[in-house]
Length: 92
Image (cartoon, rainbow, N blue to C red; front, side, top):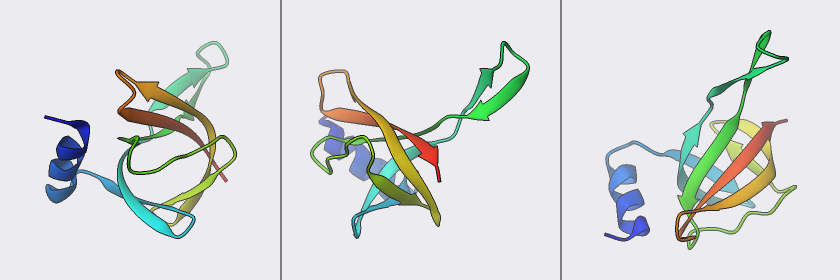
């Protein structure tokens, strides 16, 4: 099964979140896990989206909108064989 088919199935099951980039909406896996900072004294959110590389191209500095909130892309990495990407975001 290719990554696009997997994401389409997840979208159809309601497991993905709509992400808007430059007027185009793509469904992605959005996560906001807590990350320990300041040597364990505080928690910080580490916003991320995962998506098939063929669905969109993101670069550092791009702005995306997720559920009415704006985020700036701070890093993009390929996952596995490169068919899937993960973008790390900072909330604006």
